[in-house]
Image (tube, rainbow, N blue to C red; front, side):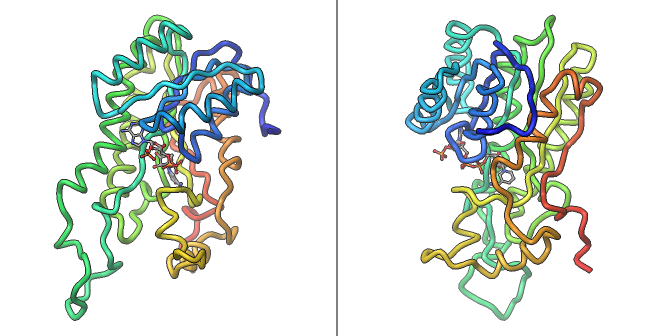
Length: 279
Ligand SMILES: NC(=O)c1ccc[n+]([C@@H]2O[C@H](COP(=O)([O-])OP(=O)(O)OC[C@H]3O[C@@H](n4cnc5c(N)ncnc54)[C@H](OP(=O)(O)O)[C@@H]3O)[C@@H](O)[C@H]2O)c1
């Protein structure tokens, strides 16, 4: 793959969670291409192994490590494997995350005349809590375990926020709130760790078609949904992003040369979505 930036990450031990998924598998491959030793962490062991295999087949370094980022013992076990096989963590990418139907309403605006659908009033708080846990608490717990390795050395943490952190999207109050918390946590942690030589930033992807949102964007027979029409109309570039278009922002923020004085930023990569007022 041709990378948009040449960043030297030679032998940097890089832990990336959710790396069996669409976006973070592309990140993992790019990191390996930059010379990093990549620990591919995911709850889906098979998906993680496939990504690690793709990397090692090219002659780069990667290991697959199964983990549940919401389970402290699982995180500790993953940390022990990474420490033994690759060494202390230099770079942490908190990629595990996503939405869940239990945190999603059927309607965009409440209409008392419409019955038989899931409205805000029917949302299961446990489902909403799951989405907050998966996006916020998982990033916090993973950072507690892996960023300790960076203390007294240096380090780099990158979180994956989202467009809906800036302004909530309809139907997904849990995911919007959770990603707003991820952006806020990024700023908080950047401040907290700044004197320790650890930079903390985030990227905020706009709309990329992946497993977690496919059902919202396309019907079962592959036709764009009404929501897809609205998204494209609200995106000045009038298209979805491709996963590799995140790589420039991603690699730039990890580059201790080019981004040496940058910490606590949330960088949108969204085809102009966050800039456009709709008029
Ligand atoms: N796609 C977009 O348009 C978009 C936009 C903005 C932000 N993002 C964010 O980008 C990140 C990557 O998402 P993606 O779109 O690439 O989604 P994805 O393809 O669903 O990948 C997420 C991966 O995380 C794994 N995972 C789920 N729960 C986990 C846990 N507790 N511990 C460890 N791994 C876990 C998933 O495994 P299972 O599949 O087995 O659950 C999956 O392999 C997420 O934080 C997402 O919120 C995506």
